[in-house]
Image: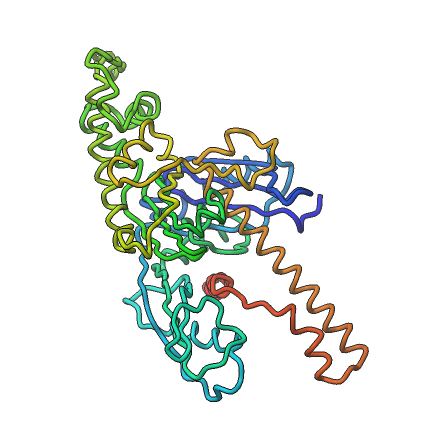
Length: 442
C-alpha cells in the first residue's frame, strides 16, 4: 500500500488516547483502515502530567491500530487542547511603503508576523493567528485583500495561545513512543472539520466538544473561526459527582452514567431503582434513577452555562453575529441521554449531535462514526490535507527544476512557478520548532 496516501491522527485525551489510520478513497472520502484506543493514564484536563504513563498509552493505542490496519505507523498528526489554551482578539496594522503596488501575500505575512511578536504571559506561546477581516485605508469588511491597492493594511485577528511546556511535553511523548510528529492541530478545529458542514460554518454555528477532562468550544461565522475557548470541565467531573453523591467507586459511577444517566430529571419515575453490588461482601446499594439524573443535571447545567457565556461573549445576541446554525454537540459527553433537549432549553438555540460521518466512506463502521471519535477523524483529515500540500510543493519544485533546465529568462521562470506558491501555516512552523527543540534537548 502506498505510504504517501495514509495519514494517522493521534488524539491524546484525558480519558482515552486514540490512534486512527485513514486514507482518501477514489471518491475523496476518508476510509478508516485501523483504530486503536487505550485508557489515558498520564493526562489531566487535556494536559500531560505523567510522561511515562502517557508514552505507554500512546504505544498501546498505536499497536492496536497497526494490528487492525496491518500497517506500520511512523508519522502522526496530533491534537492539542487542554485547560492551558486561551484565545484573544487583537487588531494590528502595517503601513505599506508604496500604495501604488497591489497587496500580495508578503504584506499579509508581514502583518501576521507582527502579531506573532505580541508579548504573552511568561511561558506562553501563540499557536494560531487567524485573520478575521481586513481593512484597507479605512475601508472595512474586506475578506480577501490580495490584489487591492492601499497604503494602510489593517486586520482583526483571533489569536490562540497555549503553554510552551505543555506543547513540548506532548512532542516529547510522541518522540519517546518512537513516532515522528508530522503536525499539530488545535482539537476544536479538528472536531469542527469532521462534523460541521460548509453551510453551517457560513451561517454561524457553535461547536461544543464535550471530552473527559475539558469542554472545547469553536464558534464559526461567515466561514471563518471567530472564537475558541476551553472550559476545564467535562464528563470526568460528572462521574466524580456521581461517585461522591452515591458513595460508590469510580468504575461503577462511570457505568451508571453511561447506561442509566440522563441530563433531564423529569424523565425518570420515582420507583426506578438500580442496585449496585457492595464492596467485598458488603450490602448492595440501591440508587434511584431520579437522584442519579439530578446529580448529572446539576453539573451539566453548570458546564453548558459556562459555554453559553463564552458564546455570548462572541456576541450571539447581536443580529449581525447571530448563529443561524445553532449548536452542534460532539465528543464522548454528547452521548448523554436528553442532553440535546437540555442545551436547547438553556440556550434557546437549535441543537444537533455532531457525527463525523459526512467525510467518512459509506461502508465505515458505525462505532467510528460516533461523536466519541470526531477529533480523531478530524486529525486524520488534517494529516491528509498536509500531505496533499507537500505533494503540491514537490510538484512545484520539479516544475522549477524543469524550467531552470530550459534556461529561460528569469521573468518567465517566475511567471511559470508563481501560481503554485502557497503560504505555510504557522502550525507547520510551530511543529518544526517543537521538533528542533526536541532534537536540541537530546
